[in-house]
Image 1 (cartoon, one colour):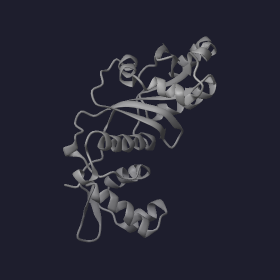
Image 2 (spheres, helix red, strand yellow):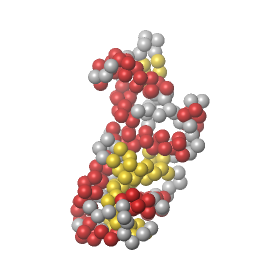
Image 3 (cartoon, rainbow, N blue to C red):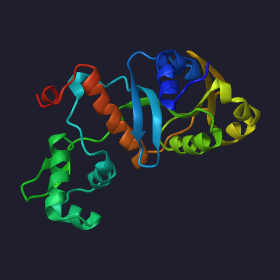
Image 4 (spheres, one colour):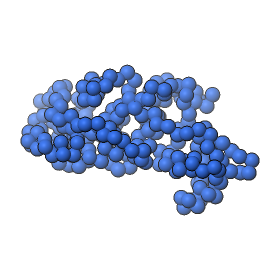
Length: 234
């Protein structure tokens, strides 16, 4: 069976994301997330599947923050204290924008206000993402898919290329290239997914790309596991 579009290929794959994740990583999923078209800031992954950290629950939630500003939050939390002016000067933004970002951090519980109009750390930012697996889907252009999938190793422990089985022969013939870049290869025939190469686990650094995923996954958890912003504020 061949797929008429990449979207149909992706939909077929997503019929059984949990079983594929278990097979690809050797880890059993209980609670899990599935993101479509995730923008990492360094490429848009068609699919990201993964798990949450075990300590994540509705009772430990906070409000979401702008994923583009997680790195600055973590950097400034290392300081004894800082002001809106310090933040604005560091990142070349206006005082009003600095106050808006700092207020997000404060509402989320990461900062506390001091008497001298400065802020200091109230709690440490920590990852909510457990394991993650990113996929770039193409009907047959495996080279383009591989170039994209290589980027996803910046935020995911596993990265794969997904192809229509009818057009996967050239990619399979170049499996050594996938091994060289530690990117997995999957083909779909109807609703059957075949793993031609399973990559080794990739160690993830705490970068802006990972933080963007972390915030996206955090929002997914609140929306899909019965947690709301109203709940978080209680």
